[in-house]
Length: 141
Image (cartoon, rainbow, N blue to C red):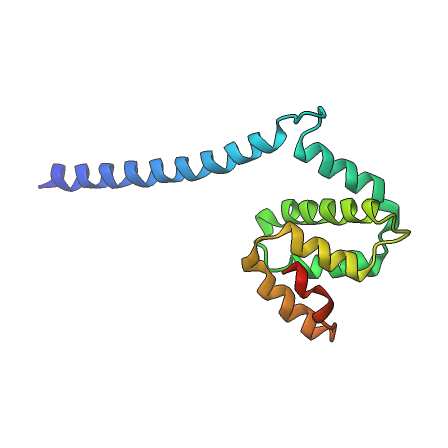
C-alpha cells in the first residue's frame, strides 16, 4: 500500500519536474537564439542595447515614468526584460525618425511594435486613462 502511494508520488513529481524543465529550456533557447549574431555581426540583443545607449540622453523623467507605467502589468521577474525590449524598439524608431527627444507618440508606437497583441488591450486602457487619443495609432495595432 505504501509503496504504491510512494511510486505515484515519484511519478507525479517526475512529470512535473520534466514539464518545468521543458518550459525553462524553451525560454533559455529563445534567449540563445536572440543572442546569436546575424549577418551584420550583431545579435538582436546587441542592437537593442545599442539603440538604448544611443538614445539614453533623449529620455525625460516623464517619458521614463510613462514607460514604467506601461510595463506595470508585466510580472516583476520579467519587467526589466520587457522594458529593455520596448525601450530598444523606441530607440530604434527615434534614430530612424531622427528625433531630438523621445515623445509620447514614439513610446506608444514602440510599445505597439515591441509587444504581442494581447498586451495592446492594456495600452488602450492606459491611453484612455491618460486621455490620449488612440485614433492616430490605430494603424499600428
